[in-house]
Image (cartoon, rainbow, N blue to C red):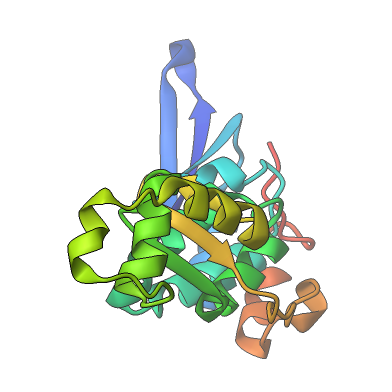
Length: 199
């Protein structure tokens, strides 16, 4: 789900790259940290925009925990996850991302609502919030209704539609002390006692 790359510039300036795929077991992380002596650190993921939220000095235990949570996201929530990352409200740190994944059920994605008119139509007709006769729908102006919704819901138009975060978002995770034990053991193992990715 997440790949961590260390690049070391060897003889004649030729780059030597090693990587670790997360989630990983404690033994693999320990071995990777023992090998890692990097000039550059980078990340890759199939989730759009995810790695842009990472810094170069991330705690590998937290990254591993995030990767495990992402692996458990059901397929039907993948579009909501992508939209929530684009929304950018809970993406400022690994801690924020962990809480985001744990609160995906607090987000609602209005599929294909790419502008205020489409948002008004989706909310009013598809979800049944407007009582309009079927024959009047083609001539109804949904844009003002969509504008009002946008102002009230404080969501964001993203590639997949319109994303909203409801008020019942709860921060379950506050930092490395909250890591489950199996992720704590990998956090403080290996060459670097703080197990942060440093270049």
